Amino acid sequence: MTEKMLKFVNVGMQMPSKRSTDIRTEDFKEIYNKFVNDKAKEQSSRCSQCGVPFCQIHCPLHNNIPDWLKLTAEGRLQEAYELAQSTNNMPEICGSICPQDRLCEGNCVIEKAGHGTVTIGSVEKYITDTAWEKGWIKPIKILKEINQSVGIIGAGPAGLACAEELRKFGYKITIYDRYDRPGGLLIYGIPNFKLEKFAVERRTNLLKESGINFKQDFEIGKDISLNELRKKHDAILIATGVYKSREINLPGSDLKNIFPAIEFLTASNRKGLGDKVKNFDNRMLNAENKDVIVIGGGDTGMDCVRTAIRQKAKSVKCLYRRDRENMPGSAREVYNAEEEGVEFVWLSRPKKFIGTTQASSVLVEKMKLGRVDSSGRKKPELILNSEFEIKTDMIIKALGFDPESLPELFNSPDLLISKWGTIKINLDTMEANIPGVFAAGDIVRGASLVVWAIRDGRDSAASIKKYLENKKNKSMEAA
Ligand SMILES: Cc1cc2nc3c(=O)[nH]c(=O)nc-3n(C[C@H](O)[C@H](O)[C@H](O)COP(=O)(O)OP(=O)(O)OC[C@H]3O[C@@H](n4cnc5c(N)ncnc54)[C@H](O)[C@@H]3O)c2cc1C
Ligand code: SF4
Image (cartoon, rainbow, N blue to C red; front, top):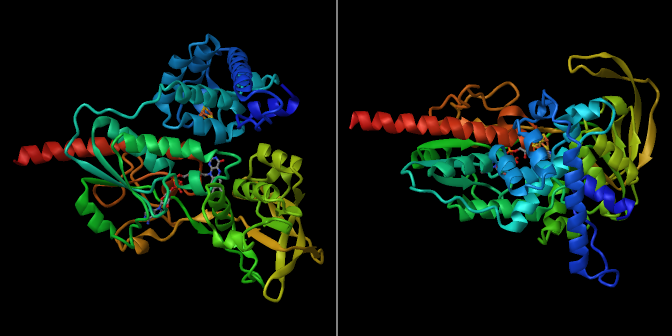
């Protein structure tokens, strides 16, 4: 194994394909599988089985990490998989895309002692990929269907996890989604170099085979109102995510080559899935051979810069108003982006986009860091007369997302929302102020993580089950 191959294994990504002249594919697969197996065992056996499992505590799903590492080290992979999937509906997906440096791995005792973390995410992905390969993962077989139904709005990780958990008990489930494919941001947001799309499709196909109905291209608020949907089901889960891109209001903001991150990433993901995408094919949303500027230093910004590099941009710059230490994006992502050739313009923000129909440059002003603000980070302050210009052909705004106005969109003015536009829920039951309507994922938390969406999906399923049992008991008492 070369160093380059090792890197792919360590981060749990797909191996680059080998030319058939180098080695026969089957032989290669065998050597590779053995290598990965040895590597997973070796990593798992590094776990010290410490008394206080900080990794488990800091995993939002409280996965039983020490136990499945021990089983993997002993070669008991099927048992390791059973344990991993008992708390996580998508272990291979979390293993690939969780920011482990901020969660499980960042709190590994061995990491804290300075010896490098056990690569928990990669092992989790390996165990579950093996389970798929060996046919251990099967559709849900219910003993008896319960005559109560749940309508789930949104086929992202929160909606999918809730659907799976409720189906295990036998409830009838329909998931409604306004996109043509299920998966939410797993399919159209997160780039395919981070998460292979077949892994998402494999999961959603399994749910279809488990008897869950999917209604794609169906938008609540347009095709049906929330109130009408409530009449069709015994309970509703709202798991619609957050999609309103934050705007930047500066002179020239309306120039034609300035795009929201989600538009750029969706076009790229659709191309990867084999779709015809007019605005990519006509080069509007294609970064090839362009000088690209991405504004924003969060994880979405990192996905944009790394996607632009893969599209063979001439140059890629990332403008961020704080410095490296105060960046919201994962340190690992910044490192990866720099390795791939992205230039970070720290302590800078755009002042004006210059051009007639298209921006040809951005006027940028320099910042310095002042005192710590309410977010716990140093506040950026403007340095007067510090402007300079950067040439560009394409600008991508990655400034974060807010919720759409759901009461308006759903034609449901009685639905209570917070001052941030997220749905207000009872934190114990996850129920909104409308009886029988629950909410989970980003639409409750604001832009967050897949692993938290799965956690919410599972918690909401438990609450919906209780609600449906009560409802049934009451109707039996009344009869
Ligand atoms: C570019 C990008 C990269 C990211 N990378 C990572 C990462 O590496 N790791 C990580 O953990 N997290 C990442 N995240 C965050 C993660 O994707 C989200 O936190 C997670 O997907 C939220 O899940 P959800 O189910 O709440 O919503 P979503 O995944 O957003 O799914 C919501 C679904 O609801 C549907 N919907 C919305 N409104 C309606 C309606 N009115 N009617 C019908 N359907 C509707 C949408 O079409 C969508 O399919 C990333 C986010 C972005 C934007
Ligand atoms: S789900 Fe995420 S945080 Fe939890 S063990 Fe897996 S990779 Fe770590």
